[in-house]
Amino acid sequence: MGFGMRGHDLCSKRSFEDFCKAVNEMGITDIQLAFKKSITDISFDTGIYSPGLAHYLRRTLDKYGIHIVILGCYINPTNPIEEKRQAEVKRFIEHLKYAKILGADMVGTETGRFDPKLKHNPATYTETGYQLFLKTMREIVDAAEKLGVTVGVEGVSTHTLYCPEIMLRFLRDINSPNVEVILDPVNLLDNKNYKNQDKIINRAFELYSDKISVMHIKDFKIVDGELKFEHIGDGLFNYEPTLRNLKFKKPGITMLLENSNAERYHSDCEYLQKIYDEITEE
Image (tube, rainbow, N blue to C red; front, side):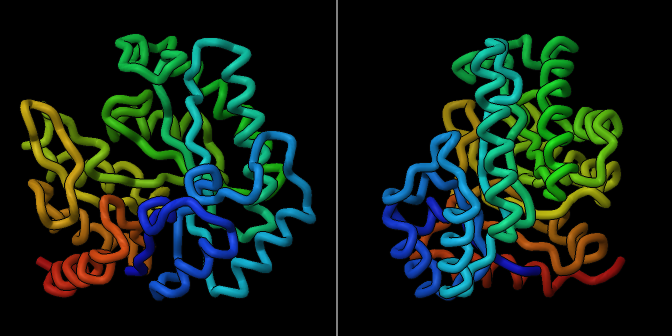
């Protein structure tokens, strides 16, 4: 496996050059970058993009030996307010333009909730919610295909694509080589299904391992009846099924650590690598 980290977990917000320097000093080459969560000296508001700005960013990344695995543009593609939904689509498409020049593997998003403020809403899991999400993604994927850029979609148990089966439905409906899956196994779990985690993770790999292109990895605990994210190795997540599937179905995949930090990063990688190395074919 390759390892990397989300930029906003690695260090506080700062200038782009200082951010790249901090990543380099940690010996990290692969990152997820969300502009507004990490960078202070450049505006990334919709409409700011130009090829000149993107090439400046690319030169700086190359200077420090950094590759963007995921350019994060986490929108709410199921926003029921049409004006806001269209604004999200426009912002995402602009990120596709950045990605093409930056050499990012993909632009990534979760799949949102049927609520203007992204709050929990039962309508998220309805056919109405799904069809609105699909409409949004068709607009985005049309642009991605024209630009030659990949869109990464991440399922979450409380979002529109909430389980492996509905992710498969989406992949079949969208039917595009420019759509791949960002798999975060913990994000598919909640306070009700976490004891079936091995079955859920294996099901995801069974249904669409060919479309899984990058991993997010973290841990979790149940606190007062709610699932809370935790540092790697400090919770209830069973890493073996995920790492077994990766070893035999997705060798070489990049794993981006979440709920890690600059102090823990290298030991977290060693912890995961040890489990991976000890897995043998049954």
